Image 1 (cartoon, rainbow, N blue to C red):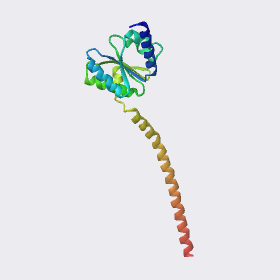
Image 2 (image 1 turned 90 degrees about the vertical axis):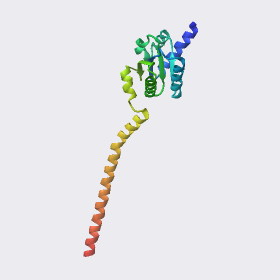
Image 3 (image 1 turned 90 degrees about the horizontal axis):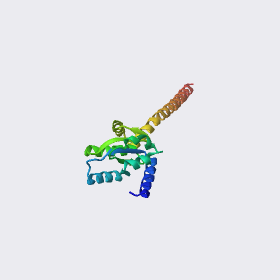
Image 4 (image 1 turned 45 degrees about the vertical axis):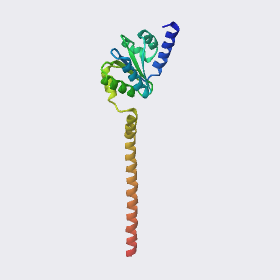
Length: 177
């Protein structure tokens, strides 16, 4: 690889590392070209990507990025699964593929800037999708407000019934006189 190409690859990786919300580091030994292509296509359909790069270039690109804290993972053959929007989707896709194809070994990950072990990645993958989490949060915030509105409405309704009863009582008392 020529020096200009190395500089381009490092620059491109730095940009990807800066923008990434999630990165999963894998050992792809034992996977054939067809299996890696299948992984890439599966990830690409979810707007994720899988790259195999030289460790020396990846270490250089990691400097000054959130990936810098995970540089020790760059040993042996390392493939990078990168997600830019939803790190949860990335982790789920990689874990699904690794369950179906045991040759893909997960080394660790980086989610929202925090280094994660394989166990932590598995725990993260058990979380519901982002949209579901947001809906749960909105529901939790909305519940006390709707209960408060119902309480206010009940108070006003009771007051209206009390006024109506008083009006009827006075009308009945006035009719008896």
